[in-house]
Length: 256
Image 1 (tube, one colour):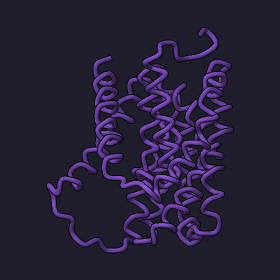
Image 2 (tube, rainbow, N blue to C red; image 1 turned 180 degrees about the vertical axis):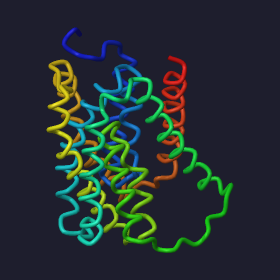
Image 3 (cartoon, helix red, strand yellow; image 1 turned 45 degrees about the vertical axis):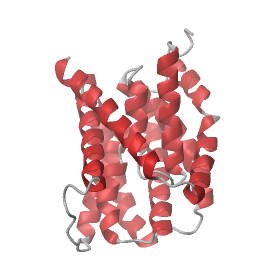
Image 4 (cartoon, rainbow, N blue to C red; image 1 turned 90 degrees about the vertical axis):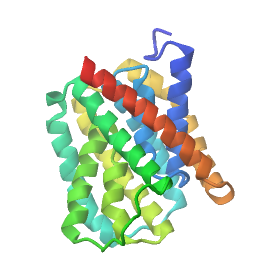
């Protein structure tokens, strides 16, 4: 097992589960659950290495997903989002070494926890949602930049991208296709900075190879489930798991 970063069976199961959930989400089932991947992997390995492994998996998922949504994306929104996301990726690369392991754990823990708690509040109807007004172009650009930054650091660009796109009230298919193109662009942009920051070690590459065959299968499963299965219990289980994994990272990050 010395070739791989993950050693014990329980950690392998959690890591495989995280990759599976992310892939199913990429296929359009379960919403923006890409934020789940790093917390599940970070149970067993450091955040930086977990992020490098997930980047390889995400690119494979993006290639699989983009073929299924060909031509359905919103070019107007992408024209606003992609330049801003590129700036966010650059900011993430510049500040990469300024953030400690504990800071990264706190960051991803907070993002995941806020995202999950927000979903549960809406799901349980604790707070009534007011009617939203379509925001300005700069609102979209700002949150696109934030999505690029958080995506670079811990592959948690989903929540800020939702803040940018959901108020635009796009058709579901257009929304899904636009997010797929957005993250394909961002993830490809991250390869060179990750290489420059020496994140692709031999153990990272060997460990990622274990997950590679699962990636297209998980995306295909998401497309299949999106058409045939109610997402209610999938959401509940995934967001409960996100609360637990993110809370654990938050505690570790603030106590070490």
